[in-house]
Length: 68
Image (cartoon, rainbow, N blue to C red; front, side, top):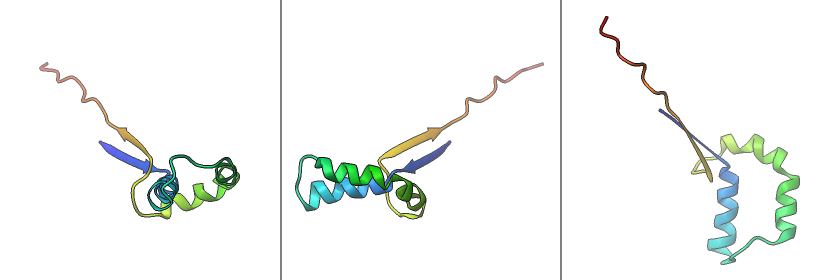
């Protein structure tokens, strides 16, 4: 099984707003700025350490065993 995480920058943004600034929501302007810079974050995200907001697990079902 393989696990993939991404959107590390999103996790950092939530931590910044929630823990550091103690806000319950993200302001509309902050969200617009983030949306306009997604092209940049997509390039940077794989280089960032830490956990992401999104997790995908890829697993394969084993083939049935044949006794012939």
